[in-house]
Image (tube, rainbow, N blue to C red):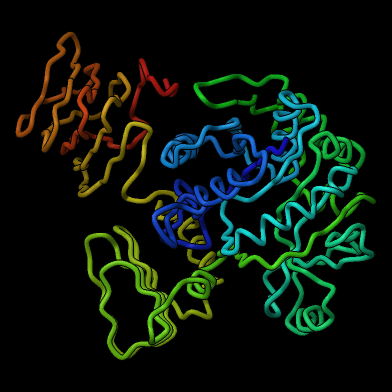
Length: 470
């Protein structure tokens, strides 16, 4: 049976300021209503004999993964939480151990969560062509037939044909300079390295043990200590941290004698920059990609994305990227957006938070938006989903005022439990044990005013939590 494995790592730098550490690009709706992660899951689910997908992700993103799976009505084959990022070779090994436990003969289709594939029929055909060599023990990667000389991707050179449409890998090559990339495209035997693979899970573990035994040993030890937490599989941090950090290409594919490649042209993009998003999206007659409330006058070739509650107007500008969010705006020439990481590096060096979090933060119970802040106060707009509840908690440094705007909330404050309806408010004194629960069928929206000497999110002592965070 086919077991799709979706690798959902990523630190959220290349599409800043929209993509951030707590909400990297795979969870964003960039080209429609669904995120890249959801599109990847759906694409996998439509393959013949596909089992529910296995996701490997960071602990910080666990509830986002669960929420987005639920949002498209897909069952999960398992959500494995990496306590630290160790690159793709250990992540795939975790998934391989997971699926082998359930199916000793499992075939794994490994896909990054943040890639776009426009021609699903061609992708499905490529998976079918890859099946026979994978069934015979080859580790098959998918090479994207290049449309142009791209210097931002690694390349794969194909060797002799194994079966129709599948070839032995001659060599992997690093990202080339422009002249070398031109030569690769002209030669015709090179493909972009897509980072997608098909192989037996047992064969991957066998080759990993042969070529990177330290990775396999550490991952096996960590997996042996796994714990179930709601829908998630947790691993002991120290054991997993002992694994070397390495990609599947360096650890296995460049060393094994059984690497194969299936070339495919399927409208693939890793959407690695704002310019690549502009290139794959539908644009207007002036070549503009306008998303949100945008007015464009005498402007061509721009990508403009407006924040939810603000209009952007352009006049007489060309080839710009303008991305507006609630707390940061990027303005860049389209040919410079590969350098957005320099801005993120500056934010890190200055100890700022805009590369880590959006002003609007998603939680398993809903979301909050920090709409105002001063030296000793903060104002949040909070939305709690039907049936959801915040943790039973207390604060050491702040008090809170809650004003319900819509819906009905059940409030616990020390030994009192009472309802709070629309246009009603309550006060939570400093140190009080409290919780808010939505027992209704509609979202509860409230305004929270915090006051005190310290207002950080780490001033929370969780006593009980239905989401396993206490």
